[in-house]
Length: 144
Image 1 (cartoon, rainbow, N blue to C red):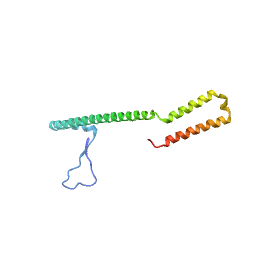
Image 2: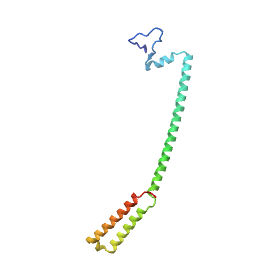
Image 3: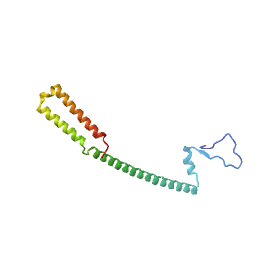
């Protein structure tokens, strides 16, 4: 009832083994129980060996995966630390900007009324343009 030989449309040539039987999953427990004890023990032993091999291989794979993730995480952490160090390195550009801001603020505090005059605005704009040009020169200059 649960077993059946799959019938093909073409006849098999003489001397070839018959095609394997198709077994339905529902009938598998009955077939296993009907096996001879020797065959049952052999299949059970093979199954246990396969299961043990699968489990050990899977555990090894997960160990490799965890080690790989740890290596990647450590590498990424190192890259991030080096990038932060790179960003925080002292350079001349920040000093130029700080001096410009300090001079601008000092001028504004000392001569607040002059800030509204056109000539003063032009001078301050020129100083900002000069700072921009100096910064561009520093940025575009080849590294020393």
